[in-house]
Image 1 (spheres, rainbow, N blue to C red):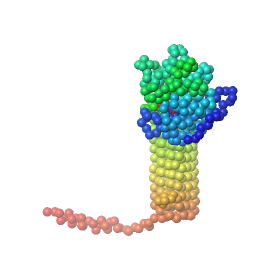
Image 2: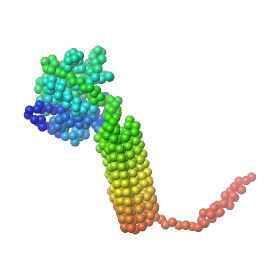
Image 3: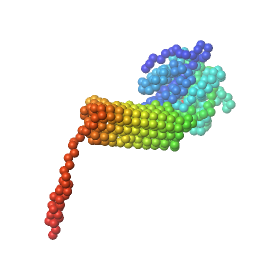
Image 4: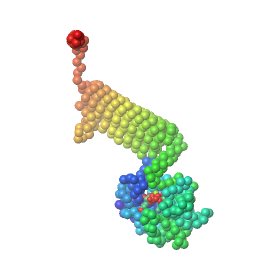
Length: 488
Ligand code: UD1
Ligand code: MG
């Protein structure tokens, strides 16, 4: 665990000092998973990463704290690159307890925005509006609400009166009366608190509820009874407050995030046929006039340039594809780069570290790993190229294999510009084929081939004239004899 600092970093003296605390310590019992809930992914990123991105768009990362507990080290390392700080809630005794634990750190601020780490669609705009409403209202607690058609499972907002922004209480589903369960206005799990009032009264929370936990939601009633102002701000966009407590909710949110991504890409000039079949992660970039066919996955930190066509059933992960590239059906690309106007597939497998040059072709059932294939070079059929540096204008014949592994170490094959490797060759690394050299088909190359040379490394062909005809003749009487013997 990193030690968290207590000093607010960047707020000016005149403006209120604002922190964000993201509650992310829970196990996520309802997911029935070894993985902590906030690390379950939607849109290709952990739930918590989405919430952190929204939070750090509102205030600097130095004032954003993730409250972690269950599998804390794993959660922390998965979002370590975000620049936020961490607070450990070693024992998870409820959302109210999470804030109790954060007290030493948050006491240095005037207001704290509290976000749920399991609701990934929250936007920076809504967080900012919630804060502004809270400051305008001079409230001790402001909560975000939404009207849901299916509110089951959420806490319900009990207002003082239908028109009032003031809140009487938040009632959790399990404690709600049948009449309260009919309320469609739910507590979204996002709040702003005035820090002095929060911590003056937080010890009044009790665990007298069905889960025997400290509910942060009970602060509404606690503060109201202490004559503090508690108000609610309702968002017009209920979609952004949905939480992921079950696998079904995860799948629903994932679909929503991906559909929004497709809509955004299409608005930016990308053609996506049958978008509901495509899986495109949130951070993927695709330039205009590229066409994505049905059943394509583009994942992780991938970029596809302009005027490309990605044909069906291809899976692209953490790869960079330049402009004008054709990826034919069924290709798999992992951590690779593809140059302008290159053609891949069908059924090419680019494993990590493949760097395919401008205009190069990688064809049917070709596997590459940690290679550089130069400009305009071709490996079109049934080939394995691993740990190889291949120059420009090289032709790799069908069935070529770089034998890169001796059982202990990996070795490099170098094929220089303009070389021609005939079909069915094995190149036993370390080995070099010089510029413009030819390697005859079916050769096993174990020694370097000089520039412009021809190397042939195979058994010499023997021809025996008439051998087959003589064999047929020799076999024929014996066959007849055998038949005659069997006659009665
Ligand atoms: C909570 C609210 C509910 C609201 C819903 C919105 C409470 C008691 N209820 O219910 O009114 O409608 O969110 O999504 O708050 N967590 C901790 N430490 C803990 C317990 C939880 O950090 O000790 C974290 C969880 O990891 C999660 C978040 O707090 O990210 C919310 O907890 P969760 O158990 O999902 O609460 P809900 O049952 O969804
Ligand atoms: Mg939840």
